[in-house]
Image 1 (cartoon, rainbow, N blue to C red):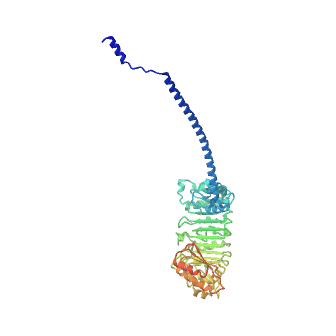
Image 2 (tube, helix red, strand yellow):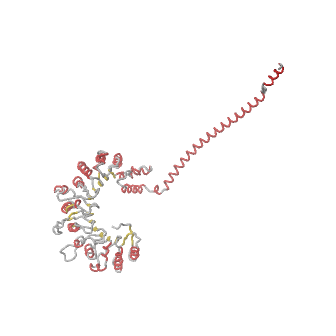
Image 3 (cartoon, rainbow, N blue to C red):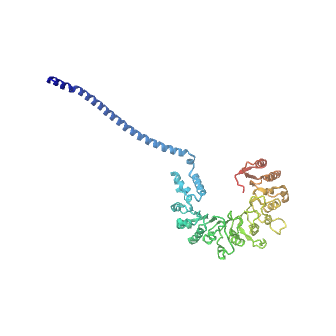
Length: 517
């Protein structure tokens, strides 16, 4: 190949070289610079808007918070609870505290103090809301200390409850003693003490501890409830001379004999201040002799209570020997007794006639005899309601004004009941006792009990209540006698509704949500 051709070939294989023009680059730079400047101004503008919006957001949030607070306050002012005066709220709080379950871990008074500023102010400035102190296995000692502090120096109502099993001490050694120790320094302020649902071992420990505390000068009421059938109330819980101002005793399954330590001769005045005595038999004990007291022990117990005003006996809790004659037993006079309540758990109690024959109560105003509802008539005690050896029927309790009977008076004894309680103005009856209003019975007795102002009918054996209509018809025929107010149970029974319609012709009717007992 010739040299010229080779040179030409090399020259043609080289790439074409680009020609750069300075004017074009200068124009592109100006365009980019202009766009960057525009975006920078846009960024500054957006940042300024963000700042302004952030400040506006803070202002809106602050205003919204203020409005929400004001709206909440306004809602509280217009709500029914907020419109209640402090006195009404306090009454509601007190009822809630009294009605709460002793086993509740969250105390109502503590919860109330955390609802609002107003409720807390009321709770903390009312010491009586904090006077109920519960000693249970789940009680926080700090909570008890808080109650002692917030109750100021007011008397305390102490409840020792729910210590079911001593085995709890194996998992928490001396837990009972430590919990009780937190409340013992306030023993001088105890007004009421209620003990129940606790095992025998801890009851024994509690009895020993209470004996070492010293005089309980403020104690006025003692109550005990058995944990289970067969458990006996320690007589030491009656306190005796340890509580010189004791006024009320309400215990289950107390066993007393003439030789009981609390009935020694030198302790004759230990119960002289007691005015209310309630003795109960645990529901599951029925006729168990283990949990009943001797008649002599019961007699000695009452002898130490000359100021007794109310005596209530529930269940067959006195053991009477079959050889005991009413004429042989000594009577006991209770000059201040005004209320006698007898609720046997059987229609044939073994002790009832002895108790009624024993008690002499010239100032008695309330007599209550309630047998269980049964097709069998309760034991007849009508012959014990009149004095013996008198030519004319002379009542033993002539001043009784309130009489409550259930399954107690049959057709043959109705006349005696009328004669035994001539001054009754409030009568509560049910079942067969309505036979008292049988017209032949009134003719025999001369038509007494015309001073009745309030008649309460309980819901049992409703078909017999029609005799009340006949009685009211006979009463209204004589304009001299005032027609009593009749109270009856709320019911949808056609017989009772028809009875009410009949009674409306003669008197006013009030419907009550009563039970059937």
